[in-house]
Length: 228
Image 1 (tube, helix red, strand yellow):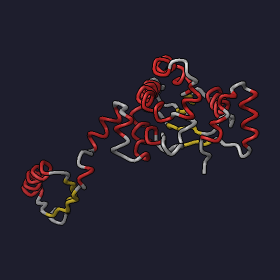
Image 2 (tube, helix red, strand yellow):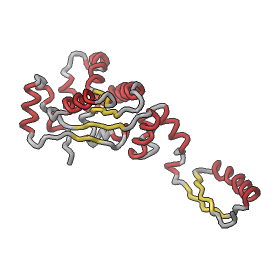
Image 3 (cartoon, helix red, strand yellow):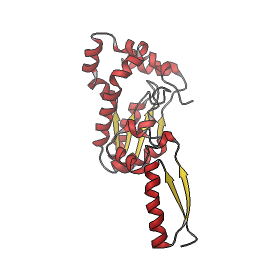
Image 4 (tube, one colour):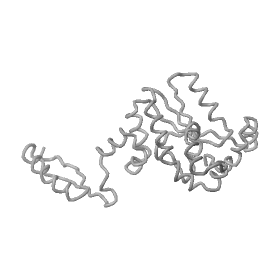
């Protein structure tokens, strides 16, 4: 045991005081007296594994994204929710996301589809309260920051509720068309397992949007980024 080196992390003065007790205990009980200490940068003092687990268990998605990388978030959420996989499905309007996800869920009951378009419907009363009878599509295109301030937290709350209701051992697919927008980067909240459905020809996407009678979504074909 005298050849063992302990590698420890110190975030602040409180940790340093605690480490004195650890050193004395290990010396007395096991004869360990070699240590390598890693000191945290000041910006990361608040991060701890126990705090991170607590945030994951409570699905505090926004705060969790400040503690660990999206790679870790994927694994944490899958473990907490007891599911196989958590996928984010992204892509422009008219590329077949909803059709694809409905097919998956119909073929296997273990494939569960979360349709975030329903969130938008649930938030309409809030938007009406804030914007009155204004055209919400126009607001989304011209006043996006104002819109985000109002719906960001309620939207995340709806996502948390949907995740909590997932059946165990499922593959969960969360459709978030705007998930790759640089000012959204939704993988910060749901992890890095991303499925992108694309269409090389935007004219085909436009035609599909028109045929399903949702022409109000046409401007978002250019707004939502493609895979590149």
